[in-house]
Image 1 (cartoon, one colour):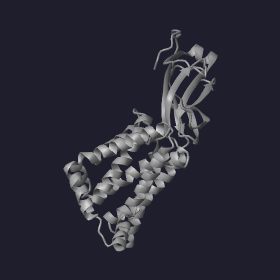
Image 2 (cartoon, one colour; image 1 turned 180 degrees about the horizontal axis):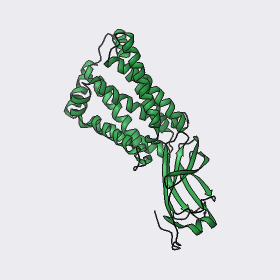
Image 3 (cartoon, one colour; image 1 turned 135 degrees about the vertical axis):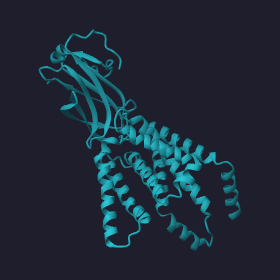
Length: 342
């Protein structure tokens, strides 16, 4: 067995790119399986979470293995396994966040950070010479990756809503951050312990306040339309402009088709904004599993006397995470009959 492990280590050192390529292919394949609703996708997510439990209990399980089998697991093998788990997790979640990110918002920062972490995980000089030796940085990367993985996996496995998944993932991240910080900054007296506790709560508080910057990993828009007349089976092309006269006479429909995991029941909101200020918030209950997304729409008829200006319809979760944004302009003059594609 020891000889086999040694051969595996030599092959990994000789072809380090295989680890990165394997993590990338595995992660993307996992996304495709989930996106198609395959049953195997749930097992992929479960295996990913079990691997994270191994990471959290790595030292204890390694010692148990040594006492039971009287053999040591080579440290390089453990490090490669950790790197593989990071790669698998990051490339599993990155396609979800890429699709669901509203790029002209703070969500671009979160997804961009995940992309940087994903790049670090596949570049060995960065991973082993820059991140791994810095314990605090390694643990920060570990916690961020787990947070993103939980946001993606919990709605798929447990059918939790986006709001429930975010709260649970944030709670787990806080619990993990405390022992991680305690490892980096040892608790030598009660003041340091209290300071670490305050710092942990501050991390959780910052995560909660910045929740609108985190994309709802498993919810995304497959089709949107803003129109004065709605055919729900074949919605028209979205309007970029509508005249105030038509708006006040007919009202306006905001149509959205939202992709969600099978079995998920979620409440979302169409938040109507006029020149950056919220004027209406309409709740919609959606169900996951549809091939073309769950089709939902709101029909707004109560507009200001002078509605001329910039309008937005933000599609948001209960906790304020943005699923997508529909934009249109109301003009004083009549708009040509032809609808403009967005």
